[in-house]
Length: 157
Image 1: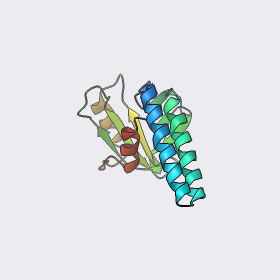
Image 2: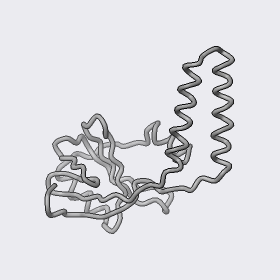
Image 3: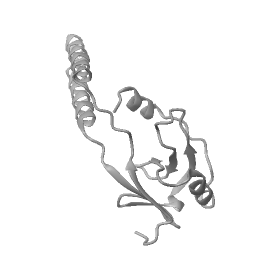
Image 4: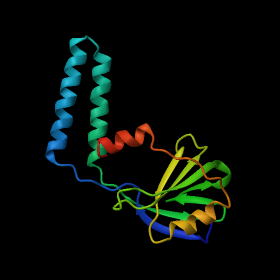
């Protein structure tokens, strides 16, 4: 990893929302109903997939989000110990939300299979400074909310 970061900060990738008992009860009831429906239609494989998905959602919801280290270097962007080079990126955007409790975010589309979209909250720096610097290395693109982003937001994960 390069030594001198031009911009470096820490933050949580997503705001952690504490789930109450009602949320877990709703997840359990919906899961049981879906599994029973799959059994009634003699589709045991679907029942197992639904059960595995519900357990995964429950575990993900119970997990506290960790604080990440973000940095912008002259050759790329790092998230914790992972370095993403500008040559492996397609485009970027600075996202500002209507909800002012959410921080401005740096959105980057990459060519990586396992991490095609980086969404980095910007703390402690002026987003315009970061925009000006990264625009020297990457083209700006349209970054809209994906289906996965909407599902995660709806499930409050």
